[in-house]
View (cartoon, one colour):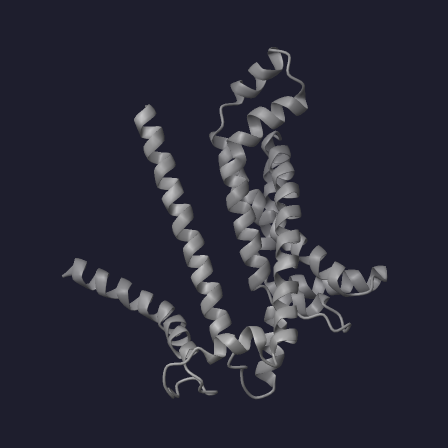
Length: 267
């Protein structure tokens, strides 16, 4: 009975999580303007997404969202990896204090982070726009990269790095040929996490986006919802994004399993 109730509870949670996504995907294949009103199978919304009247504004928001996410994820991965290596080489209370400070932004509510960055940019006199959004996303994504890279550093054998130095390698060569290959899985995980967080963010973006007309996908949806309803083309867009993310996760898991099997065969 315990196993039955546990499985029932698990399937109930999965249904609650994925039912809205499935509903959006199903109703993306109909022309109905209102979600829940099925008027027959059609791909008109997909055609309208890339060729209709919403094309320019919505696609501009998508382009801004993904370019900001790519820049923020790349920079935060670089900064977070360097920071993780520095923290790993610390000892005692200094390491504990820096780790504690790194965890604060992740525990801090997004709205507090957004307001803090907004006040910072205003006090410095920086005009809010594309640059401030990128800087803000880098700021809140970097701690997550540090958290992703640290376990890989803790699993690494420190004697390998020291052996490379003893054999004549410079610190940069040892970093490039020893440490980076060891922490690469953590860096990839941190990049994907930072990319996802940047795309998903709204609270920090809305406080740092300014009033120059810049829009991301989250602010576009928010402004569209305030008008009294959501643009129907958002349904196929959500479906495409979900299918892309699902495909990437499947590929990543397949590659991880193959790597694990190869490692087991070698052992």
